[in-house]
Image 1 (cartoon, rainbow, N blue to C red):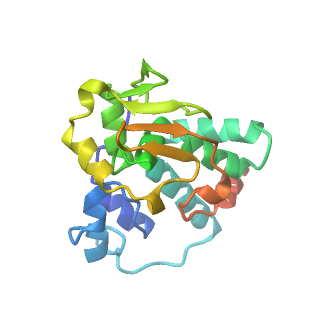
Image 2 (cartoon, rainbow, N blue to C red):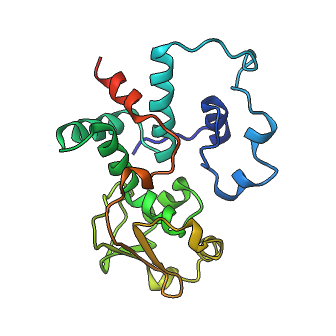
Length: 208
């Protein structure tokens, strides 16, 4: 499956905000965005005036990069969100937020979506007692995500869980740290999506 393999910090600098693609590094003094907050490239420090299309494009790129999906996948999500009942932009964000790799990150089993995707691909999680190695699986209300018994000693998962506090926990998820198990208690509402994004700009971009 195709995926972005370039430098993650470059994406944060391009979007002008932290996308938290490298987990712990993003909150340390090693963060490239903190040291060089201007866009990459020789002329990066001179920000030109952005027109309407540019604003729409940047919002789309930002969301794609935060959730780690490529253009074809993103268009597929948008098409489904457009057909579903409700507000298209909100539907789109909720679909992305309920991807398994995002849920694993929100529960605290991983420090970033890329790390969560790798853990899922390596069969470290069970969904409702069954193996699941598809990062794009959409979690449903009532789903139980747990770390496999053989993977509970994994240092990356344990250290990530140690950083989880009640204040950071998403309201639509319930975590049992001792059992290394999380439950999807409800589907997220728009206000549960903490990403600073104007989803209406994405709708306008694809509606042209």
